[in-house]
Length: 330
Ligand SMILES: Nc1nc2c(ncn2[C@@H]2O[C@H](COP(=O)(O)OP(=O)(O)O)[C@@H](O)[C@H]2O)c(=O)[nH]1
Ligand SMILES: [Mg+2]
Image (cartoon, rainbow, N blue to C red):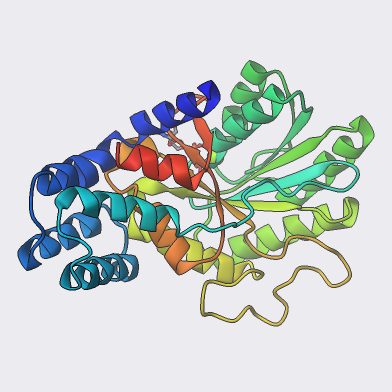
């Protein structure tokens, strides 16, 4: 399958650094070696260096250790195969497709801290959707940071889509209102809403986000259908904490083991996506911490839906666990 191959090879390029730490490391470590306790500890170190996370690393290492003791695993090459298989199995049948409106425009709200890659990721989504023949409208609701609107506009000009914008420093909820009206009037397939970078600890900004969401919900039934959290993969474990904190602050699907707040399912009487519905993991090309995808899975049940592997609108992949693991282990 040519398409699959090209996806794998693009991801592979994007994951070069992870592969250096994890696999060339693991490959060199394991090939031609017989398994023993010391080698098992070295595997553990490699996994942690790639930011796979402590829980998953422990589980993988315990599995290897048990199979070693029972004589099922003895060769380094078999351990590599074992790791590939076990990692791919971490994502059973989680739904990674975009949530689509049953009728009318599908609204995608994009959030994340400053510099995470929101605006760039929006350009990527836009390019993916346009490639599928969809019509897209953008909303410049980051009225907070100077230059943010212009940045989105530049992308939109290159990609040939329109942007609804307001004044810098203006009310982002008002922009969201105008954009939702325009999306309805123009019958676009998708409205993608850019928001100001905010830290989950910044209460006023969080409230602003909630306000944008409720404006969208009032104008368009079920909106926002998708709330994408953009996480910078180079932030390693910090990105993972953001995933947990954002999903708590925005309500909705709770991190594994943490109950959702009582009001966590969106506006009563609407089907709006309550919390974060998906993760766009940016900058995987610039990191040796590709294992973060595993750590995110471990900490939350929010599906990683897209990965960013560069700075152009084409540098995006739909996340697929099998090609991911394949790319990671080269
Ligand atoms: N290498 C790389 N850089 C990225 C990626 N996504 C975003 N960036 C860069 O990260 C910086 C911040 O991105 P921006 O979209 O402005 O972040 P925002 O503040 O969240 O909107 C910019 O310099 C982008 O070019 C990616 O997938 N790979
Ligand atoms: Mg931005």
